Image (cartoon, one colour):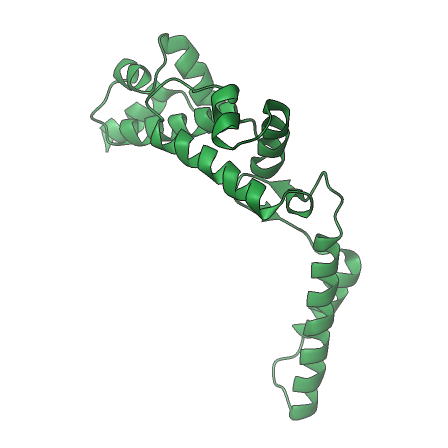
Length: 177
C-alpha cells in the first residue's frame, strides 16, 4: 500500500486479479456475456471494497477518526496553507484550533495525512519554493528567505530531499528554457 496525504494506492490481490482478467478478456458481449460481465465486475468490486474497509486501524484512519475529527484536522490544514510564509505555528497552537489534546492531534494528523503537521507544512512550503524557482525569476537565496529558511544550505538539503534535485539545478533548467 502506497499512501500520501491525499491519495492511497491499493493493489489487487491474486483472486481480484483473476476476476479482473476474466472480465477484460472478451471483446464482444452478448446478453448472456453482459450478465456474466456484470456479475464478475460486482464480485471484483465487492472483494476490493471489503478488503479496503476491513483494513486495520493503522492503515485506515477513517475507521477510527470521526467526521468531526477529520473536519477539525482540515481546519489545521487550511491554517497551515493560509500561513505558509510565516513560521510554523507549532503543534500546541494547531491542536487548539482543532479543539483536541496535543497527543490526539499529533496522532490523528500523522495517521490521516501520512506525515506530521510540521512535515506537512515543510512540504507545502517547498512546493511554493519549487513554483517560485520554476518561474526563473527568483534566486535560490531569495526563495529560501521568502519561505522562511535562514540558511541556504538547510533549504538546499530539504529541497533535494523533497524533489531529488538541488534548487540551483532546478533554477538552471528553467533559466535555460
